[in-house]
Length: 291
Image (cartoon, one colour):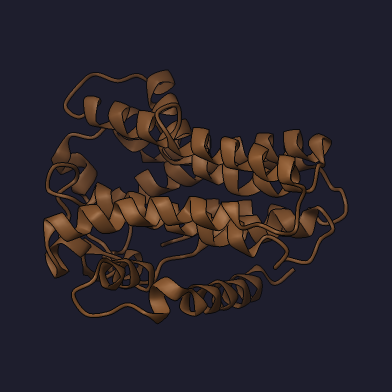
C-alpha cells in the first residue's frame, strides 16, 4: 500500500477533527484554551491517532468509528510534550519547529494547559457512543493505567532518574516501554476493547510493544544523526542532558539492528490477517523514518 498517502490522508482527517473541537473553535485570547489550541495545532505526525485508525480498520470497522479515542490519545500526547518541555523537566525552547508553550505563553499557563489536555482526553472517552458502557469503562481504565503512575508517568520518572546515571539495556527498555510505548499500545488496544474483540486485543498489544520500542530506538538515533530541519527540534540534546539512550549504550549501528529486530517481531505478532497491511506499513515507517 502507499503508506505515505495513507499517512497524509489520515493526518488531514485528524487535523480536521481537532479543528472541529470546541477547545480549538472557541479559544479566546488569554484563556487556557488558547494555550491548548496552540499546542494541539503546532503540528506533529499525529501518529497515535493514526494508530487508533489503523487498529480500527484492522478490526474491520470504519476508521472514524472511534474518533473520540483518536482525539483522546492525541490530547494526552500533546499534554505530555507540553510538560516534558517545561524548565523543571527537559527545559526545551523548541517543539515541532515552534516555541514551546511555556516560551510562547508562561510556565504557569503551560502547566495548566497540559493538565486541561489530559483531563479533556477522559471527557472524550466518557462520551463514546459507539460501544457498550462496560467496554467504554474497560477502555478508560486501560488508558488511565497506560498514562498514569504505572505507565507514562513511571517511564518519565525513571527517565529523569537515569540522567547522568549508569543504566543498562534492560532498564532502558523498561523506561521506554512506559514513557513512549504505553500510549502507543493503548492507541492500538483500545479499539479492540471497545469492539469486544479480546483475541485481537492480545495481538495488537504485542504489536504495540514492539512498535513502541522500535519507534523510541529510532528517536534516539535521530537525536544523534537526524536533520534538525526535518525533526523540527534540535539534535544532540540527549547527550547534553546525560540521558540514557540506545546509541549511547550500544552505538548507532547496534541501535539500528535492535530497531530492525523489533520491526520483525511486530510483523510476526500482527501476522498477515486481513487488514494487517496498514500495520505492516506503519512499523516500516517507524523504523525507516528520517523525522
